[in-house]
Length: 222
Image 1: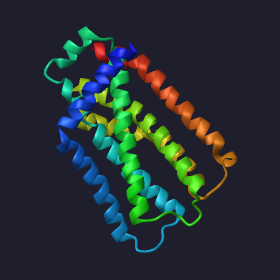
Image 2 (image 1 turned 135 degrees about the vertical axis):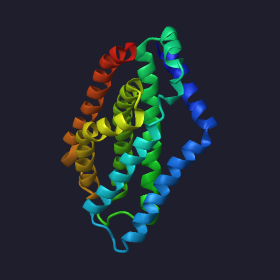
Image 3 (image 1 turned 90 degrees about the vertical axis):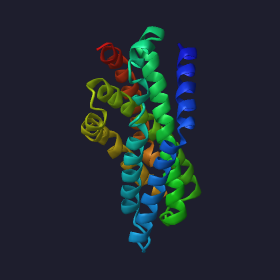
């Protein structure tokens, strides 16, 4: 199973690298969004404002980056793929790929924010390290969720509309938790203060992965 997941993931990455225009469009979106934010806010941002702007840009960047995850399976390729590997393999490969895209979007977004907007004065070097871990867990959760949502949208035949309708409401619990954790991190608070939220985020990521793995085979057969 792991070998099949690796092969499908490698195929996804190779196809994405061969279509560099799509990737560059997403990166341009993140960069331009941060730059416009920089032009609009001339003063030093408060933690809450910095936080809100960052996660809004990352959320929509991740949505755009993962929107085409299942587009490569059009034209009957999904039926052919179903004959080769189990549905769980397809989901895990798509989820890992979507997670990688989300992590790249969030990482570049954070780097752009630091360059253009700076960090809140309370943020320490240790806080930056914790924020990096938060980006990894955020990418994992968003990727797992968006892979399932885009799978549902692909099977419905209305990928963009369905993904938009399902994506925002279903991602809200995850986003709310991310905002709460990052608020503590940017304020330079010790890990003991927000450790329980980190554990909750990890648990939420695992719940999304498990439930999506159970639901996806029924979705894919239809």
